Length: 284
Ligand SMILES: [Zn+2]
Image (cartoon, rainbow, N blue to C red; front, side):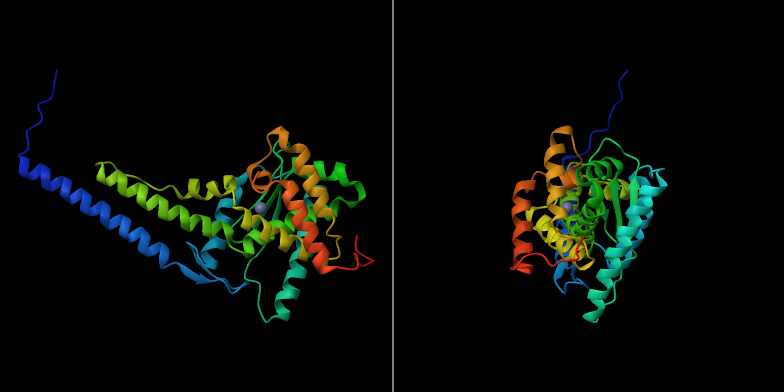
């Protein structure tokens, strides 16, 4: 059995295609215009950035997406360590910002995830920060009594991603690409629907560029140092990442670009820059 499709006249077929191409062109134009209209001044760094959301939207989206990021750990004691180290870093951050007359807009939250296989830590835009039990225990094993300093290095780095709004910058770039992909769909007679949850979920698997990682390492070193942790613990974190990278580690912290070895060099150069005469006593 076959359906007979009424044959359209050559004219209407042609104008249908023309209309689709016109709509596709409008979508491309719209995504390009809105991408370049997205310039916002970062409240912390003062840098003008292309981001998809304002700070309040980042916070809302992060809080909404947080429960989808994985099972919370049932290890109450370790979760408390993560929350306390995080709170100490945020406290330090707020002091630094207040001295510059800036109020911290982000309600930071620190979560230990029950995942014992994936060595990873990541942050959602707006201040939701996550570390897996796998990374937590590797750090504890490697650094023993000093492991809280390592946790501080990891969380400080993730706080850096939030403050620099790296996730939102990536999303803005993603929006540009998605708009153009959507236009291709319209031109081909198809349609595309954006799934916000999947979109936010993408951030977890996002690989930041080298510049973003180093920028966040700088925040990590500064915050941990000011909070009283020796910044050298971040070097231990790099050792652990390098050792575990064969075991299918997570994408954010395990991002091979830049490799932990290069980051180690960079971290050492920041420490050298801050303390040319060696680390002060009293850090732990
Ligand atoms: Zn990172």
